[in-house]
Amino acid sequence: MPADAPTTLFHLSDIHFGLEDNKALDWVKQEIAERRPAAVAITGDLTMRARAREYAAACHWIQSLLVPVTVEIGTHDMPYFNLIERFFAPYRRFNAIQGLLEREIDLPGIAIVPLKTAVRAQPRLNWSKGWVSRSALSKCLAAIDALPAGTKALVAVHHPLREVGTKGTALTANGYKALCELAKRPVLGVLSGHVHDPFDILEETAHGPVRMIGAGTLSQRLRSTPPSFNELTWDGATLKVRARNLDEVPTRAMQIDDVPENALPPREPGEPVAAVGQVPRTDPPVH
Ligand SMILES: [Fe+2]
Ligand SMILES: [Fe+2]
Image: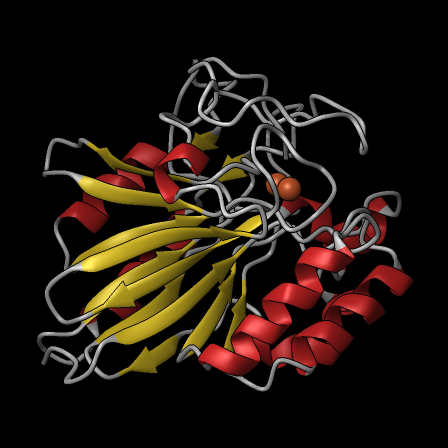
């Protein structure tokens, strides 16, 4: 059943505690307190290097929001230096917010359903890229299929489900396969992070288009747009996306036109941000 009143959701990403933007975070927290979104989805890269002090700051901030939150795991959120811990207990450091990890949030007429794309290890050299495992996809699809009739899904991931590059270099391995399955279901969009710039694009598949919505970063690791988050409004018929930012740059000028192939930091904190709206399609990437 469609929601009776519009539902507001906040989509945050890539806060990277350790290199967070505190001015932006204070503002977002105030916006959450005033607007009281029905839920907040944080699509990964909560921390910079998964250090204990970064987790402590992240957990403290999330717990202060006092609204339902779901947190996706990003590649930066698993132990970086300790490979044994990364493999055997990748989420141990998340303890304080264990219950919020990759959890489904059910609201009237709409649900946020997680799909894991950050894995502890994968059979290629660059582990910062995404990987949709068969079990992760099955779990996500089963959750969507179990939603009450008429309920729409927003799927929360860290990596955009884009399989650019060759098999070995794909941004998100099995991303296309996942998109095809999502296209067959009542999915309003896929919420992602990782890229550090917002976007809102339609991805074509053999089974129809899927809307891919990316949130920018709330860290100092800027790519081409100021710190931002997405405000989503669902009125039962249309999902509207606003890329909110302190600089009051209009949403369309905040959004990049395409998903970059890779995601490496292009600049050091403090370097000027490129002119908004002049982002080439092959822009150097971030994560
Ligand atoms: Fe990332
Ligand atoms: Fe990131």
